[in-house]
Image (tube, rainbow, N blue to C red; front, side, top):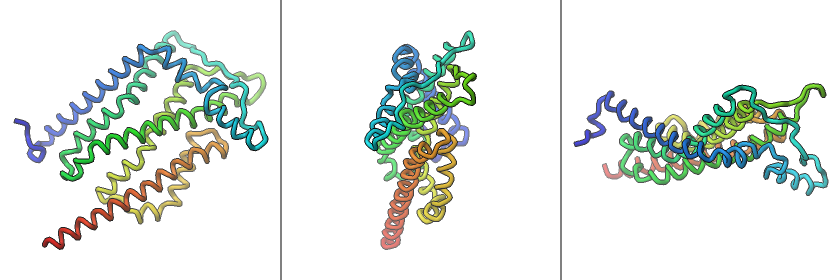
Length: 275
């Protein structure tokens, strides 16, 4: 018979955590193997596509530019080539790209495993929201991944790939550097978009309140702009494009904390009335 959660020792909790990590790792490697097999599709249709001037984002920005009667945001080429300068460079890139793809594809399962680990410490009413938690967390993560892929990555590639300090210096970008930029943009965006979920749990623990978030909104704006400057090219337009969804997420977090505080106050009032 399985042990009750309240009767489990510290070592028992560690054992549960160990199996949670093992199952999550196996899921990542399983999806990673699938990504490894579909090498041509992963690299030709996903990884290297943002280097193509006909990439969706470039065409979209060009169409917006043309509506204002200018060609300022239109590009005809991205003047650099991607190369591999080490014997195992391409194979290593293939391996790590497959693992990254495995993590992204396995994210809903990982969230499910995390939920199963923390579920015993929640109230019965909160355990009912398992599906909502997994769906919302996965949706926000994938939305962040798409934002990183279609916004941050092309803006960074277009700026950094075309940037030159002198005509004699040509950009021949190493494959690991190119993939590293794409991976960092995609994963960081995916995790940043989990902000409402993180704020939800902090609010449930009483560590964050709507008043706290409103009070430090201006500092959050500065922090968001700094973060946007770090993960995007050093131009104002790119930083604003990245900063806007981050501030939307921050404002959403305020709404979430207000709902939680209001719900807890109602629960307290009901308990007092019963007494």
